Length: 160
Image (cartoon, rainbow, N blue to C red; front, side, top):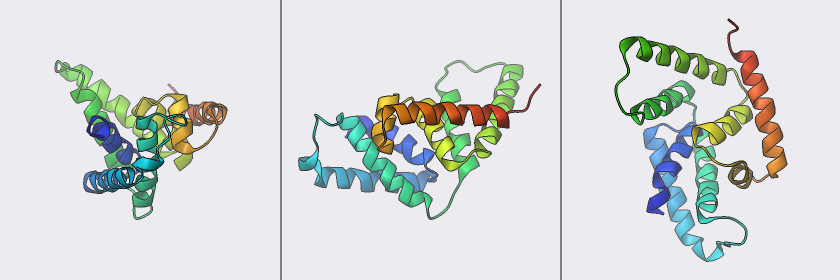
């Protein structure tokens, strides 16, 4: 479970929880996973996917109590930039901030289900198969939802 804590936290953030709420959701999910470990079936899903499904359910519950969409994306964008290594020049940093802001604005304009599938695929880098298990739908459904969500996001992007 420790190996998957980081991605579990990021997943909880995708579902709208602030840092404290995300941590609470992850802890609650880990407790539930521990209690349900005897019900885990490796033939149905990898342990990682099984655990992330539990985290997603907990985080969805946390989301119902309030949304912090922009702050969540700023944190995710900050994690991406922090992991890139050397500090970029001020011009590159400005362009990256503008690009991140444009993407966040476009994501904000999407329906929650569209944001969810895009962030699971590209924010958390889950495979379509893993996403299908987390969302409890067929891989083909994930593929079509992702395609439609990306089309809608392109419509939200400023043209220029």
